[in-house]
Image (cartoon, rainbow, N blue to C red):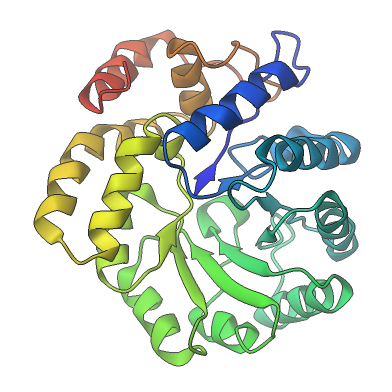
Length: 286
């Protein structure tokens, strides 16, 4: 599952023509699901209308060929409800809800936040824990409590801590999905019982990353390690600057995207260009 970037013109306007072609690129290369309007999609700089429009556009372009999991998290519970309703109305298959960022709610606040969204909008919802971005950690005990809500169907866990994922897997209801949100540790996560990855690296190496997922979920460690070795540089180097700066530069280098970013995000520093080119070459993306 790929957390897709949002192509933008040089002035920062969303480039829907490139987005349509990019959706087709992923379907042709075996991506199992698309996740628009998340962190990698620059959701923090999309206004409400744009956020909903990007989701609607991707759903319409996909035409039911693969699932669309819309990023609808916010640090305001009401805003998250509104975005989640918008995604449901657009025909998204599920929503991904990042923990409220910046305002640092308590664990009780996180429970009440997600309970409110789940009650308000009857669409499958996936929790998203990324404390390095949000400054709040949705603890395993909290995830386990939330896993009992019918339409909270999984968690994207981006800490890279395999043991906490094992704890959630062991103590949550059968069928509750454990999804990696950390490309660098994704192989071990899947070999330990995870069911998939919402990936940044998959933006630029979808076919290879799909192969990694299949091998890892199938328990074939040797094949998974062989594939992971080709992805290793990308998994690390795509974070030399804040996501999605490096991945959008790579997509431009691959001829898939224009060069536009939206402030306060800026284009990749020239000192990292050779590093990213070498990483793309190692994965066979250029």
